[in-house]
Length: 275
Image (tube, rainbow, N blue to C red; front, side):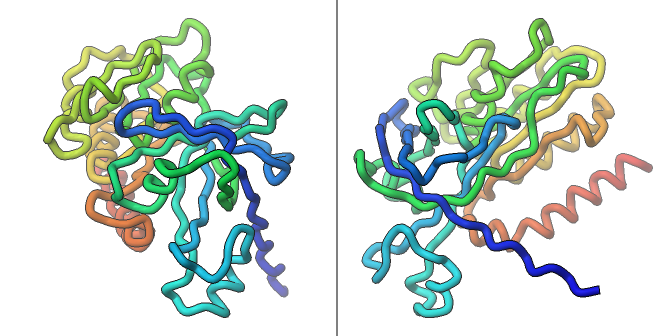
């Protein structure tokens, strides 16, 4: 049987409508334009997009065909992809909101967001997504670092009315907090990402019963916290949304290369729990 050819994903182009620095390390970009017609987010609270950035000085601009660029240009001119959570999608205004963690000149997307001005264009693929708070869980546990904050913030208004929810977010310090109801803010300071968050979750007085769990952020602490919550509450996989968004010391390309090994380690954790 002949396999059908893989459908090519068609990128969209968003145009910066507004840019706002929310905290010292977070910049909000609102994108609009005809390229977002029919974007289609809304089913999930962890929708994400893949932004495609040409290198500085590249001999092409937005829009572009990434496959054609890779076929025709040397590797140094190839675009880089960075994955970001959809903070909000307004279908009536046709506006897409994305929050970017910014640490000076570090990285690709952060510096772009810090310098973005109305009229700037960016190319993107998506949306993807898989999680929304379940109405069937006894209670909800959401925990993440700065990179998971947009998805957690998007999930808060979608929590079932009256459902107990325990929400932990780790940021660098008090200046990075946002006005979000019910969030316990954990300050990282100079500690490794996720260490303070993991300690806060594991030391908290949390309910019995089976929670719907959302744990996302730096891959090291995510795996540790996943093991702990799976063992403590015996959470079934269908009520477990856990993902390493990034890995300390690795670019997104490096983390994509590492992730199969990380997934295998997670499966080994599962096998150990089953013994």
